[in-house]
Image (cartoon, rainbow, N blue to C red; front, side, top):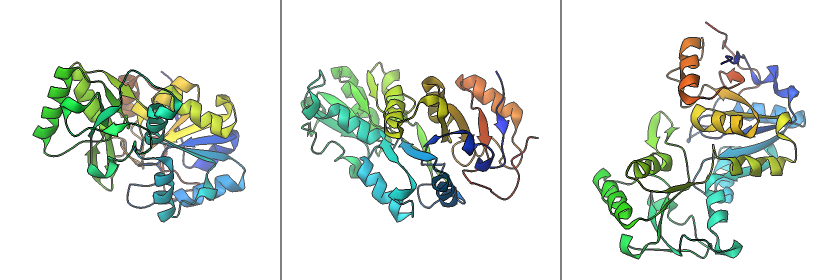
Length: 291
């Protein structure tokens, strides 16, 4: 496996591409506020006519994510498109586009604030497992024993699960939170069937490339996860850059990238980023060079 180049900044490589597929959590913000340099980087990309499509595993509709981004000053003029796993799930499950074998009633598994993801899709929420024909996972629930009960009884009924966020975990501030992908993996371990929407699955990248209107060979994907961002880009034939401000920041030191640990992570994940960025910044202060 060829190790990626370690870069000091985005400006080293950006002009070699016509467009960028860009992750959100852990890449341009931490779930609370913009990461240092991210806004300036997007402004520089716009100045150079390098199109940006945001691609997120957020289990929310794209319009809702756009509003949240605007509150952090990531206004819509800074990107050309926005694709979320929640939007992909909504589109796939909307009865306006045709019926499938899932049935019309779902039991929501996740935070109450995400329960309305399928509002307007034609599907209706069930109040119990017995009334549901499938599960819709947007995240984890409390208490843990209640989640285990729901998953166990749903598996006993043979209910399929739709996962609206394939991420297993996400960093919000400095807190590691389990996501719907973690719940889905638990369900699979019980023998349950899961349908995923979002990264690293190829429909998400096909959608992003369609919005950008350019071929994969001129696109760079940037994200903080080997498991989703880099793996998905590898499968889509898109060059990938791993940014070290999110999930791997405690494993791979930003000031001096630990090559042996990176190599092992890549081998374990069977993926390979072409580049590594200390931050998503146009010209950040500090290092980023190899040890």
